[in-house]
Image (cartoon, rainbow, N blue to C red; front, top):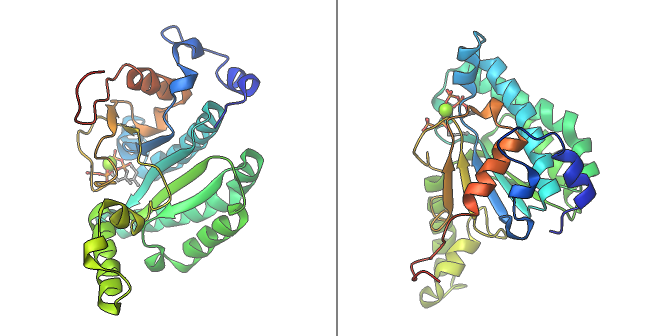
Length: 260
Ligand code: IPE
Ligand code: IPE
Ligand code: MG
C-alpha cells in the first residue's frame, strides 16, 4: 500500500537520537509483518505489577503498532495474541485475556473504521467463550468491506493444529472425490491454512528475547527474516518497529539461491 507521507511524517515526528524516519527505505517496507507479542508478564513483574496489568499495557502497545503499520503502508500485520498452548495458563489469566480481547475489540472498533483496517482471525474461534466469539464476529462483520491494511489476529492459534486441520480438510475432499491426490501441491495446502489469502510474512518480530517460534506460522515462516529484541512487548513502540525495519532492510534474502 502507498503510505500517506504527511500522516507518516507526523506519526514519526518526534525521533529518538539513534534513528529517524529517513533511515527507513519506504520502497522496501515488508508487505506482511508478523509479531510474537511476548513479555507482558515479565514487564509487569519488573514494574511490581501483576500480570494482568502487563496484558493491558500490551493492548495499548498493539494499538500503536497497528497505526504505525498503517502509516508505513504495510499490507498485512499478523499478531500472535493467544496460542493453543496458552490454555495451560491459570484459569484466571485465561479468563482475563478472553475478557480483555472482547472488551478491547468493542472499544477500538472505531479505530478500524477510521484507519480502513480489515480484521481477520487465525485460529479456531469455535471454542472461545461466547462473549469473546461474538465480539470477534462483530469485528469481522463491521470491517469486512474495509480495503486498507489487514490485521490478522492469531487467537487460539497453533501451527500444528492448523496443519492438522488442513490435512483433515484435504483428506475429506479426496474421500469425497472432489480433489485428486496428484493435484495436492504447496499451493493447495496453503489454501487450506487460516492464512489462505495472505502473503507469507517477510519479517517476524519477537519481543522479550526468546529465540523460538512457539508454534506460530511454521509453514508460512519458511523464508521469513527474524528480528528478536529483548524489549518486552509493552515497551515496543513505533521506534522499536522502525529499528526492526532498518535491520530487515540490511538482510540479503537469497531464498536458497546465490547472492544477487
Ligand atoms: C505475551 O506475554 C502475551 C500472551 C502470551 C498472551 P506473556 O504473558 O507470555 O509474558 P511473559 O512471557 O510471561 O513475560
Ligand atoms: C507465545 O508466547 C504466544 C503468544 C505470544 C500469544 P508464549 O509466552 O506463550 O510462548 P512460550 O511459552 O514462551 O514459548
Ligand atoms: Mg511469554
